Amino acid sequence: MKEILFYFLSGIILFSAFLVIRLKNIFHAALCLIITFIAVAGIYLLLNAEFLALVQVLIYSGAIAILIIFAVMLTKISKVKIAHNDQQLTALLITLSLTLITFFILNHTNWEAGVNLLERGAIYEIGRELMLNYLLPFEVISIVLLAALMGAISLTKKESLNEDKKQEK
Amino acid sequence: MDQYLAKLILKFFHYKAPFLLLALGTAIITVAFVSLTVLFLIWLERKISAKIQSRMGPMLNGPRFMAQISMWLGGIFQTLWDALKLLLKEQVTPQNADKIVFWSAPVVVFTACLMTYVVIPFGPGLVVKDLNLGLLYILAVSTFSVISILMAGWGSNNKYSLLGGFRSAAQIISYEVPLIFSLLGVMILAGSLKLSEIVLAQGKVWFIIPQFLGFLIYFICSIAELNRPPFDIPEAESELVAGFHTEYSGMGFAMFFLSEFANMFVISALITTLFLGGWLLPFGLKLPSNLSFLGITIPYFNLFGSVLIFLIKTYLVILFFMWVRWTYPRPRPDQLMTFSWKILLPLSFLNLIGTSLGVIIWKI
Image (cartoon, rainbow over all chains, first blue to last red):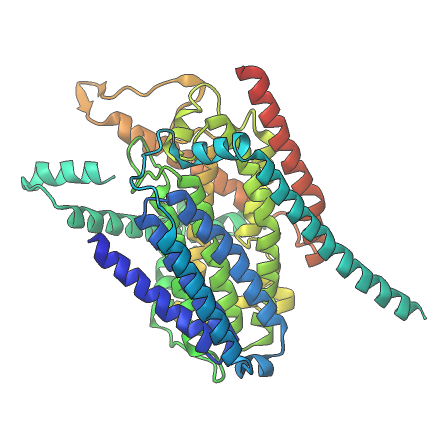
């Protein structure tokens, strides 16, 4: 049963991911991206990683995909309907080399076999690890995110200030 | 829920039901419950709006003698005929619409809405599937409704629909942040994301008392999430015709309409579960498991009583939603955004910090 589900979900992931890069209509591509994200969440569920699956749905299909659709809707419709790509060869080379590297890493890593059941649930363990063992990396990531946020705000602020000045002149 | 269903089937048919049959039975019960609730809610909304505006509301479709007793008994079949009319209407697809996206949007919105019913605990053990991460599940699943609104807005190929979709996405993204932060306080107090455990953690005191600020923030944000007035800028009739569902007719429109009310029931049930003690009585009172009255014993009184308490609380919250809807005017989109980012978000941070401090001080 689990294997059938796994192959079914993998099929959906591969097919929808293929559609994401091949569809001419960017809006349809973005919707296919959402299907891909949800199917990946399904794979996480098969691996008993419920927290990861739900966060995947919440963040990727709930926030990131919606932002992508938002950006697509803000562009001109005539431009959206005929997407074209001049760099297919470069993209193919890059993705092929990335795939090879990932494959190499996956093959040469010693994965710890056997999954211990978490006694007090995934959230408890994740929170404890983040706050005790990985506190420094966690804080560093939050500083990076904060910097990105402030950068985005300062960039947009500058533009709007310039526009205001132009209007005044 | 399926263990009770299995018991019932075993008792009446002497048959040990397999898992698939039980799952199918639970699904049918849930869908039937949702449809009936929605039909009743639409009628209730029309009656309450009528009461607030000093009208009678629908009075003619239903038994006449009941309508003569009180306005609250008139027109009880109104929504049934409305639903039948919508079923029989022609489905019009706009000429330049994106047909696949256009017709899959109502399906997505209704599916997302039905999926949230899975984790709502109506009583002890009366839940389709009591997930360990039930609260997170509801938050994750409810994001699909935004996607469907964007799909409807885009697929209709209509400027009003597109604008409605835009506004809706902007509104829901900005209100989702304080909404999730306001729920963190409840998660900290209960120490769990399982909805039944959150209910049981409220045995001594309902979370509305220590989490009043969180409750207020959640209530306001959920009105925005539901796209209900006064926060209904995605479908503001006076500016956008009907917003993202302008082009829908017949069942397509009915799906959006139904899921709007079904979502309102889910949100009210969630508020009941998280803040109002779910199926529990106040002050730690307990229901007897069997009630004997005048020599008649009612078995499973505990169960029925719990469901009754839960439904009463939920309907009180729904009445509050409707009261707010027919009382306040609609703000401008920019006022709406400012309110979320500059008032609700800092308040929800304050609530989170205060709750964490309180838990640290009182529990250690």
